[in-house]
Structure formats: structure tokens, C-alpha cells
Length: 204
Image (cartoon, rainbow, N blue to C red; front, side, top):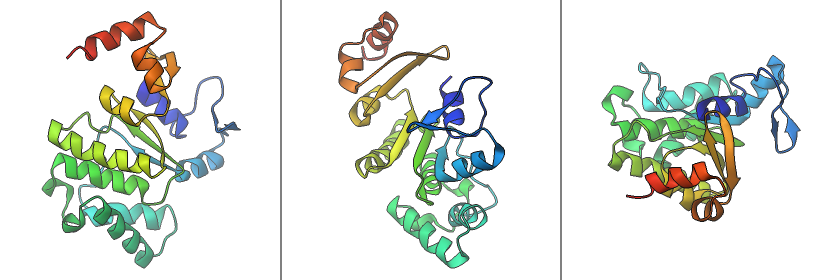
């Protein structure tokens, strides 16, 4: 489904058959090219996946030094700037257990963009959050969209997808049912399945 597709696009899984092209470039299945591809991307999944024994700041600096080759000083500067941007500067020294769900997800999002990824892959980033925390995270994602960050996002937040998406892909049972602009897909979908789905979820 959606999660598998995002993992394939990010190089975290290898397809059993077929090929993957991103911007017309074939994704090489060999381990070294895949590792390089992963480093160029940012990931955020439903679980926050923060290191519980590290502070918010350390959760950002560790991948910058260990994966992306930044010095400790440079990593700290980048990490603090990212936390400040997401209104988390006052929480830099806190461990994940001391943060709310929305704060944890914003830390995870800050970590995902700290190395300036070419592509940001977000797998239902608000599914575990309450409405207020969901709004917090969606505001940050919308800001990234406005700044030109290339994002592939799976979500059940229909209003948000319509507001910020450039292209919508409707998946069902592991298949692409329909693609199109937000206006085309939400206002005049071709598929009866899409029409039925939207009729139910957009009713209220």
C-alpha cells in the first residue's frame, strides 16, 4: 500500500519486479547507489522513531555527524536552527518522553529536513496525533511546501491534500486507481471508486 510505495521510492525496500524512476532517473538496486539515494532523502513515518535516550538536539545531530559527515560544531548549528524554526528551541535538551506527541513529530520532521533532502517522504505523519497536534504538524508541512521542498505525502487528511498538493494519487488495494490535480480529482473524479470514497469521507 501507501507505506510500501514510499519505502520503495526512498530506497528502503527493493521491488520484486519492475523498475522505479524518479525524475526520469532509474533507481539502481545495488546497495552502494541505494545507500547514496537514501542519504539524499528525508523520511518521516507514523511512528516518530526518535532515539529515546537522546535529547531532541542529539536526535538531530547524530545523523548529521554519523551519516552526512558534518563536524560536531556544524551539526549543532544546523540542528539548533532547525529546532528554532519549528518552535522547539526551548525543548532542545529534553528527551522524547518529556515532549508531547506534536512536539515529538516536529522534532522528527526537523531531523528529516536537517540535511536539506532532495525529496521528503512523509507516511501519514499525523495519524497518531490529536486534532490540535495534527494542526501543528500540518502547518509546518505546509510551510515546507510553500518554500519549494519536494514532498511525497501519504495522508487521510483530504482537506490538507487538496490545499497543498500539486498532484494527487489515489491508491486502493495496492493499485493506483486515479491521478490528477487536486481540482480534477476532488471535483470531478473519473473513477467510481474515488467518487464513492470522497462522497463518504467528505460528507461531514
